[in-house]
Amino acid sequence: MTAHQQAARQCAGLFRLGRDVEAAVEMVSLFEAVMPEFERAPHALQAQSATLLAQILAAQQRQDWLCVADNLEYELLELIERTAST
Image (cartoon, rainbow, N blue to C red):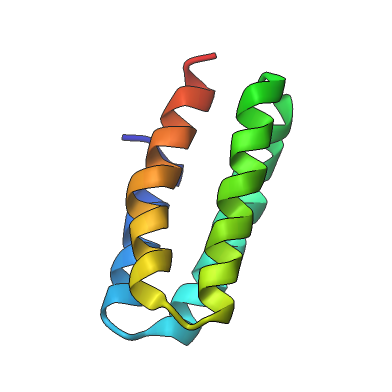
């Protein structure tokens, strides 16, 4: 598991524990770290990453912390793995 994947899991855990302010700060750092990798990925993965990040931010706006956590822990982890293997 990469450092980015571990960070995504940790961030998801914080959201699940109701520590949304701390989790949001970590999520910003995580997004800043993974964005350059997504930008170098093939176009299809770039589009998927943009869609996923928009979904995560929309869930955050709704304060749907479980949705944010699920997207971070499952969808983002998978996308990071697929991006790393290209």
